Length: 430
Image (cartoon, helix red, strand yellow):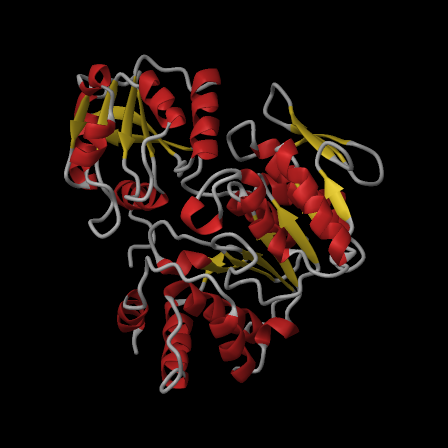
């Protein structure tokens, strides 16, 4: 297969199907020689912040000279974004060759889901490329996530909150129990611990597995300064002050600190000099998350904030950041979410900030229709809302309405942010 044929083959593997369980991934990897057992892995689970933590780890380890793989999801514009070594996405030729190999291998075997397939592909590619270390991000949950076939060097659990409740549970402690499933015997765990009600769940699992637990705010901590830098108090040693903090949002102090704590625990295997740490932190980038773009369009300069906030905690963080920063005359909100998510209180609070709301949809298979979103709005808010059938139309409407002092914010779905980013920047068009 060529690259386009490989993408088409992968897209047929039920892109939006969710199937929790390890049996298929385990059995197929075993027949492929268990590439995961030949890799040194950092495993990350959590509701929000996984990608930001991974981006910090990738930048710092790469700056220190280590050949570092990063498997993340979902992608914004191209499936190649899920597979990285350093700054480079998987080449189209390697992608096509691996998918061709797996297509032949799967003949007569159980066909995996999209996420199971990409997980297998990632592990094979990282093994072939002889990576020094791999950062592996869960897709959903942890216990039954396809990535949970590995025994990592360290496990990281970011903030835990409600999301995917039909699969992970309806209360935080149930969700935490699923995330805790990545904890392996005697493997150290780094946890944000910001939700007090779930700390006991993580602690109990660590005790059962004889795994050391390191909590933010107890064993280490990070604080964002007024100038946007980071003060980090490590697990061991002296505090580091005024470290670069390149990702926007107050919550990024914790995400960056989780990455730094994990690297402390790996110091004997992957030593990192203070200079490499600072260099790496300067290079951290995670597109589509509080990403501010300033562009010229239709004869005027417009500011567009892209953020993949799509659940209660993510939207609360976005609301806080818009309340405390991003000065503007008016806020124009372009919003679209998946059908399985209702407009929740935090989302309504965000919409209160907006002078105008434009509902749209990233794709037709699983996105809520703009009309359905409009109907969920309270009557008073409908007067400032309108619908656009496509992302292209939503962007055109927003730019036409925006003055130079206004801010356009695009949120509600990473798929929406990805499509908008592709329209604005044309990056990695598949």
